[in-house]
Length: 330
Image (cartoon, rainbow, N blue to C red):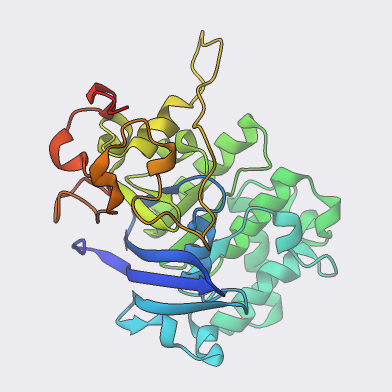
């Protein structure tokens, strides 16, 4: 169900790499000024979804079905040259490793100015002045001197701010932030998330925040989509998903969060499935303590059409009650 202000909609997206099913019917909506949190373990398809939206899939990957629609255009059908008008100007990406995202041979100011020269046709002088202003906006100290430095001369936190400055330079309608705080300490993590929120509020940007940390997602997201084995297994408002999970995987992720006074962290038994050899039924069934005979068939998101859904047969019956109240079927 498309939201009233959906800027970008992903519908039934399937992506394969050889015989591996990387994405299996992913559906998402990004709305103006809102943050969609995408969470799940490594290898569940979060980043691949972001790359598919950006038209940056690896050469071995192929969209086999589905659409990514932005401003009435199916992005999966664009030719490489057509992406020049979209990528960077209308949809921007912040990747998790700023050091590899930045060109080590270019000065910081030139890297920000490049986007303004390409997309807004600014002359180099005004573009460099605008780049310095962006560095100031994202809180980089001594923006004028920083503009003349190279990436290796900056700290990790400063490099991440530079990447965010590049992403927001052209005021894109959509920002995909792929693990933007993974390599940062807790203090810098909070600062970067606050910066993204401030720039989002200023520009009305729709943000897709990708993370393996459901705590980080919960601090910023309006809605959350939980990924497992290449598909969305739970979707709803942040409050619903965090307080009333209806899929056992979401419940397990929340139980694994560290808490004050906790002596031992809970873990999820087993490993995510190999995308080349997925289980015949529910992909989470081998790791699930609530599994029972109906799990031999993998369900869609239930209840159908509801604002809070889970890809679990128990979601039909659990309603708004936290899954921990459902008795184990072992």
